[in-house]
Image (cartoon, rainbow over all chains, first blue to last red; front, side, top):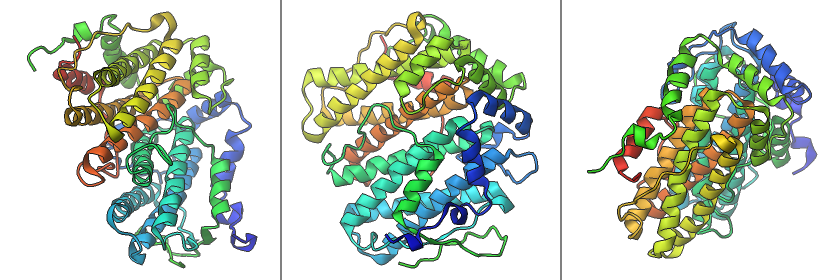
Length: 245
Length: 227
């Protein structure tokens, strides 16, 4: 993991939206943040439009910039997961339960990407390119990496729940959050053969949450993001991240 | 089953029925945005909570005072957690589980008991009492136990998911998220124990579906588990 291929936060955060939000949320008191949210949101999104996790379009001018940033943050994590499983499935190093897990979860993560891109419309960040550094090439490194990615995904969604301003966005995020937890427990169960060692599928009574900054630092630490895409098209056609593995 | 509990029996203090009105109707129809709930939540908890220490965060919410709606949601959650805790306690007491099913029941029982303790602590004197339960033999056989556990855990996930957007205090929402993830982990784990990753799938869908309070309560009544 040499530093030269680690993306900087600038590279990851194309529009500056993620860092802007992180900078705002952390130092500002929750109360002040919420008050501002009240002024921004203006009730422009109908909560009832969420069915089965479908997100409303947030491309309208009324959408709060904080929610856009949170959704783009989620989208970046989902791009990463979707690319990871897609590569693992296509490499063909998995068999049995892990292959089944990777196949099912690849479909889920791709569905999350699609839903988030749809919601964000023209404001969606583009997918970076990824280099999974060989972790998809063997069952054991795949499983360990999947567990880290899923645990992080759960903690990331959980950490944003109280920052989300629009109820419709919260409903959508909270329909994905449990699914990431399903994935995390599933891969842990495979690794532990259904038991509690080396990792219990449910290790604690209260799941930890992570703020945006430590999640982004962890993602950068993996070195999995090789380059930001320079895709110029604003098309909403699902763009499969480039595979460099 | 032949002896379903009525809503009245289940909801001894009337807190849950009240919420049905409070949160599902009044709150939604009065035009308040979620942001205004959060503002109230912020005013209640005073912004002084450390996220990441969930039970502590809940205790903080108690100290600052809880809205009526949040009290009802927390009592609803507490009732479901009482049910789950009693179910696993009963299964462990009967001693009919072995291997991974026994390990699962033992660990999950401690989680559910921790959820009960945290919810009771935040509710203080406003906490509903535990009903009495009769699990109708479902804890006496490993296969029945696993199937019933799956239903309870799946229902728990959908119940927390359904209430999250109705929660007013940020500290309560944080705690609900921390518990929601754990119920989801339980659900995936027991599904794995039943189907080894095949059927039922540990992750049956890309998006989890919420359940309203009335749907959950009617499912719980349908089990006949509450005496």
